Length: 352
View 1 (cartoon, rainbow, N blue to C red):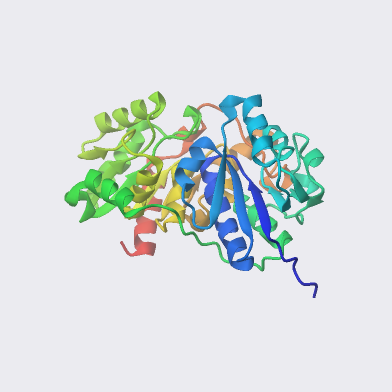
View 2: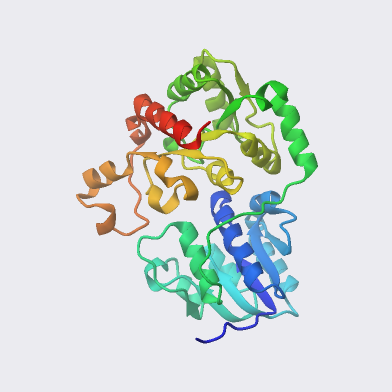
């Protein structure tokens, strides 16, 4: 058996998004264990860096895409007198390719041919092994394997402070901290991926009847605030609305206090996975086997497969693995009864 190279410097390139960098953390921390003497640098997006700031043993270099060419120039200057043993290019977007050109490295590892797109092949000189129908996290595991890391069970050591947790706990108040807690993070980045406000409210009422307190979480965008306000209006249950009131690390700590999270295809669902909180994922447009909450894929309620078959006449195994289905009203096909049934199942499975 060939011994893995002894790396002294490793650069990770994964700019976005929140869910994907959460997947990336497990790979990076597995790499740290396998290569304890290697200096690890991670080139990452500005918002994502707010979540991962102070990640143990990792230097974060922020790439702010809003700065355009100036950001690329700054990155070139940052790495001017440096050459990494290996660059792990974990993002196929063309923007990431231009970023990769600014990072000097002896070996530049990227995705296999099947997952290469947007000229990804131009920015790498080595590929990870092909993987059939793999979850995004499994793809990142492939990068770890490519530099000699043995197969591993994903785990996370997320960076947050006692102060972050204290702020989260103050927002939750003792009433919510001493009861079973359903955290609803209702909004994805696009409105069409969100479930309906009145249905979220019905689930909040149902959870409350089962002895759960209910909290809403999310960012400060107009979409998220309006959706949260609608849920509160529809609900008969007292709901603690924290949407727009937490920084990312504080949100992570709120999710950590949760007994259960309900969310569509959105970053906080994956954040919850990193802190061990079970997630009921609601999926219609993307394949949850590829992008669902990694440790809780059995808890997904989805209408993706039926819509894929309707739109293409093919199953997920017969189309490109990243194929999405289209439609503004697909999430409305997820019924309250289906989510209630999953809620009951998860509560029983997790003995809440």
